[in-house]
Image: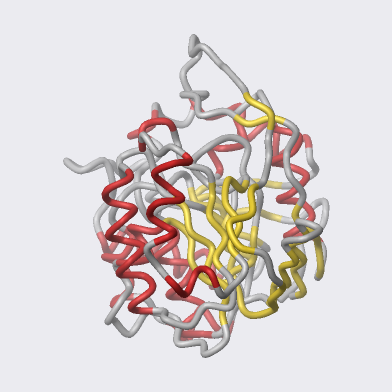
Length: 317
């Protein structure tokens, strides 16, 4: 797959929540300006602003926008507007042969987990778990987020590094109070591993279990994180389900929990201690991943190597 370069064309579309549901085009125009300052050209899908009773668009409109973006040879990359809750509705209706014949970068996070992993499973194309379009309007800690994204989409190999600070803030609100803490990636169990990167938002990834859209790799490393609405009890049972569906991970890498999850280190360690497997493989937690700020970008379907002693995470696409 072609990497991204300055001057390339990015199509923005909404496979989950619409731009209207998060304030509309103008409320998110700072993201457009930032991406244009980085040297990219932007366009927006035909049904980008369609907004129904559930804050989304019809299945047919969302499928049409995805197919048009992949078919358009002038489009080099696709960014999702934001996450949501329902992009798994699209999976039976996508033309995976069309997508495979027109490979291009697809990036988003949260609910986009379903789309990213399904496209990888059905086509073998690598996809990107990282900032959505609206993420680029965030001011604080944006440099880390942007540089991580650029490394992933412009290079064929890259390393993940800890941010200096992190927050669990409603940064999208103009008058939000912002508080930050020092970042410290944590080790639950030491080790080294190298395998294919799978996963994303835990509850969304779980929607793929038992369907034709779940990746079937035999050698994999799981990246897992929780959204604000998933408290620690939801994480507990969803983690058990994940390890039943994917019982032989080579490593487990956990993103930080938003404050709304009410997860503490004591509770997390208690949950991890339940699973003997997790004392046999490398396990990291409190990583810069998805529902806290800032977030790094990973490549679903790429080979990732993990070394907990040096806190090294290296991707080779």
